[in-house]
Amino acid sequence: MAARRWHDETYRHQAVKLINDIMAKKVNNETNCLTVGNWADQDSKYYYLLRTSDCLPKELTAFYQVTKDERWLLIRKTMLKRMRQLSNQSKSGLIPDFAWVSSTGVKAVKGKAVNSKYDGDYAANACRIPMNLAGVKDRDAKYISRRLLKFFSKQNTVTAGYTMAGKALNDYQSRAFSAPIFLAASDYRNQVFDSLFSSQKYVLLQKLTGINYYDAVLVTLTALEK
Image (cartoon, rainbow, N blue to C red):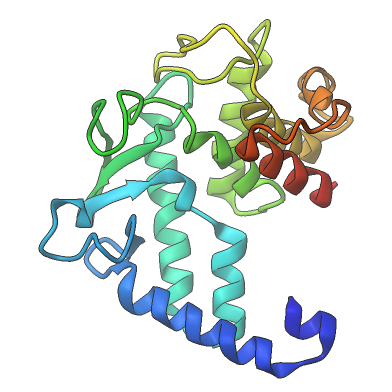
């Protein structure tokens, strides 16, 4: 983006270096998925840990476009497939923050597998999924998004986090959860989920407080997309 904006190929060369480093250090070549970090190497059990918010179809497409490395397309396809499998593992369609992934399948982790007791829930990582998939036309991406939006549209109030069974983890709203939902619902304006779109648009109507950086970042990214 910087190379296009400022017409300076130096930025593109640096981007290619970074993207190639990600391929070399952050890809599990058995599962064809991104790992949770370069520290999660083949000697670590976390080599098979999938952070679901790392499924970034638009970014992975951009990686391919700038490098012409077709492995990025395989990773993109595989991660979307695993996300769809996770979606189908719950009636709610919700997806957990983390999952164990193999070359053939995927399974939600249990709590405290890596980060917190909410690792196996739709929590502070997975809340980005609707944003990550917004505007993506692939069949798997649209399937996952619509299942999520269908669940949220049935809630009287969208709160901060849910179990895979659809039980609320908290009784308060969070713009970190609502902003991605608002953006995803925007894909279906004047079709379905209009009520969900309307109920979540509060994220753009309130001032940013400067206290919660995570909320602020996700709201800002939503505003930029809109």
